[in-house]
Image 1 (cartoon, rainbow, N blue to C red):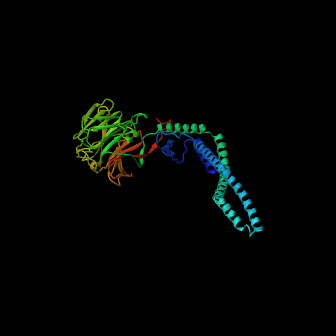
Image 2: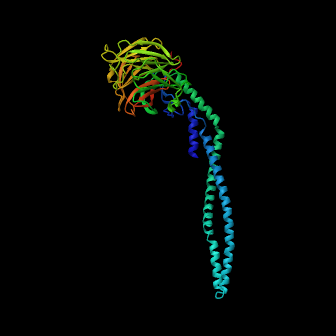
Length: 458
């Protein structure tokens, strides 16, 4: 009871405190995560927030505990009723035995008085009486057991009654509706805080979560980062070559169960596994070329195509695992990107920001990291993060910021659970990395360091 009261008080203190500046961790299924909070020299609020799954606790823990205790008391009451009926039955047997014992006592007296003449006759009667009493022995044993159980039940009911009384008093002071409204208010404040977040720097990768096991060793799966919250369609593209079939699912649940909603037969085969769905269109590299295709998923036709000038293709500058992964298309909070290598840049990675409508290169950055030494790469907030391998022991080893045109070597490990990664892309809406891990479709969670804009910031 004391632990229960402490739990409720802790919850209420957290709700009343609002955004606590100390370190707070909440399960992704329960709410938003605020890892840290501070102020920079200019007085701006700085914190780390990880977006939650879109779920909200549906009922108060106290109400749930109260209901469980009430059910337990009801079950115990029924058990006591059954024991009571059985005890009444046993009591009738005991009364019968008492009468027979009195008769036996009288017989013994009679035998003592006339031991010689009636010995044989009375002993025979005694034997018959004893035979009648034998079945009553287990009944008496059961009666004693039932009596102990009833005593135990009575004691437990007294304890439960005290617990119920305490919970009812607390529920009266802080009822479920009030607690629920406080939770909603806190979530609203957290969402408002989230809207002020600027782009963040990658700090940590956790997971993976295995969503499904399907397809070959190589492939791609993705959702649209610009889709509405109600639109959770999944697209699935198996293999890195000789395929034109894209499978669509209305939700992650349908994807897991295999319930396809639509199938697309693309006009061209794709190369590699580095495709992306962005704002309702699929962007992919046309097989045996450096041509990028924009294909409308709603209209079912090609909207644009353009050659990526000087970009290597067809395993000239792939990632370490090969698979025609020369051109990697990706999207982040800023827009659409292409990552590739050219002879002009000595086979090192080139980053180009693309116009999502015309596919024209708006700006490019040349890095010094060899494309063939990269396991995979992904963009977060205009920064390219490169892994050093596609095999076990891989980690994010290098990053390049397009904002500052600078690079740094990093050391951010992640768990390559199935030993071979052929696709790794960031989804800005989900704040997660989608990966194809040796025939397993998995998700990695990312932790970003954010700076919260204040109202005074311009």
